[in-house]
Length: 87
Image (tube, rainbow, N blue to C red):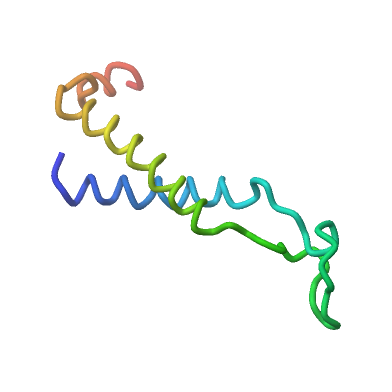
């Protein structure tokens, strides 16, 4: 696996992990008891914790990229294997 392939796998899995982590532990401004300014959405998050979620997405995507690299480098799954499985 080349560096470009590894980067593509990392980037795709990073965004997927981030989108999966975004709704975790979110409290709206209304639930948190914050003062909601007039014209603002009451359901907007009071503290989205984006830095922690970005770090989590980075760790998850690094693990997935390493697993993909290991599988491709050690030829655990090849194109011939996929052809036999899926025809």
